[in-house]
Image 1 (cartoon, rainbow, N blue to C red):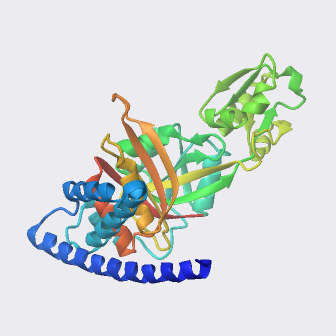
Image 2: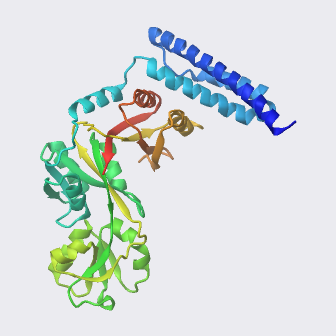
Length: 378
């Protein structure tokens, strides 16, 4: 048989498949109406398992492909039912309140909590997010959260991840433990320099101070040094300030170029980060949920039942709606045996009814569900 003839037959089968698919989705809508009237859950795992067993038995050596086809059909049907069933979960109320509290323009000013001192990368992120902001410097990430929760500051800015050294787990831990809303994010290109007192040579240095993230981002440079002690501290700007104040000609700091002028130091070596494509993302958090115009990113924390296919079920919900997932990271749950939570970031808008329905379904089906916010990145 010629290829053109085979394709003609495939086209005919596809036409039938489409008609049957549309008929099946229409029947799913009838099921949604019945479930809504009788207050039944969307997911009926026992029935799905029964159908999949029949499919696997009848499909022969195509069992694997048939299984995935029907699993996808179930997910599409559940997504459609979630759009139609009027059983709003907590996330729907949170999103509704956040949209009502937001505005068309993200604020350009306000009291902003920032970890570190003048010259810190967090301060640069604050200036990017709030050109006329009033920055309040605090000593730790936890203090940023406390300043926001207490009402001392309306906003807080925190580093969330670096392209070379990964996530800032301490910040994710704070997001788990505190009910904060992510309202904006900023991505900064980070360049690290080795700074010391004027006249200091590289061979004179016996100790280097910096934040642990910066130390990780400059690991290749540091591994090439001999007999040099590397010491973590609060942040890169604090490291530069301390080296300047101590006046020790054998001490240096991994910091930024602006900190050299700010604290009277000289650059011993520049661009010492492992990658030229070195970016850090910062998030802006508030006490109350707020979603401003243009929000096209969503952040979530979820925990799943410890069973095969649990993560696949979540990913299939996203695939069914053609949602791009830009981050998926697992983290062990403290005090548990090999249980994990997942950090997710999605390219999607909560104003899309299908997306909101998907979030509601996730809240119902996940062992733990935390909506961190809908926001835009600058």
